[in-house]
Image 1 (tube, rainbow, N blue to C red):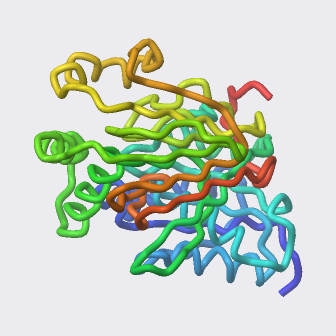
Image 2 (cartoon, rainbow, N blue to C red; image 1 turned 180 degrees about the vertical axis):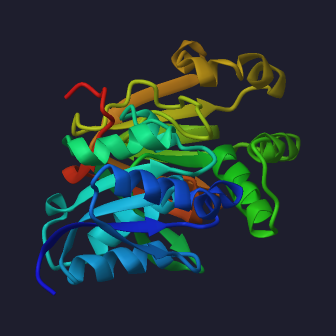
Length: 315
């Protein structure tokens, strides 16, 4: 098969508590009626979207739609980077949201209404987005992933691990993340971090939670990196230093309002490379996926993926 303009649609049937499968007939009908030429494949297991993306590109597809949530997008983005057939910027990535958090789409004005999301495929307006190459460890072996949105450290990463474990047990619901957050809160203890940014020591001390962002939203609408821009060739680093749990509770609402930097114990910088060591070993989540443990390295890859934006997004 040669190069084709047909869209390859990768559907995660488990996304959004099964909404990916349940709503696919509605989505596919909208695409058909809008004149979108496509073929589709369903994921069958974890990391399958990554595999399907690599195969689709090797088979000649240059337009890929992810039907799912942030985890599905993360896998598709990594599939785009794993393949070596064409430059990553030659692949157009579109999303029809069917997940729970849907944080990545908030940056691009992509509608949760299927008809509007399909309209963005028809118009196919694109921007080039930065990503971060992230290294971490799993069973003492170094691994690499590409981050399209936000990585969480410390408390945030432990919450995410608990949240993903609950989903793996077959539990769903929009309150599942908050349940994981509250269950983790009472038992979590801050961790010592040594952080270097662009080769210079940035912070050495106790950390409650942290975030590295290409985008600004995670955890279902939280803004831990509210100043992040997807194409500014910088990563945003936010560190919540050790503070009393009462103060954390009092300031929790600021995570959603975009005013996290008004908290005195929060520090923030922008950079192109981040190196983090922790004592003891600490976890990381990338784009909502619990992946491994410290030490971590983040390296910016500027203008690396071509994203189809929402119909009202200003380019």
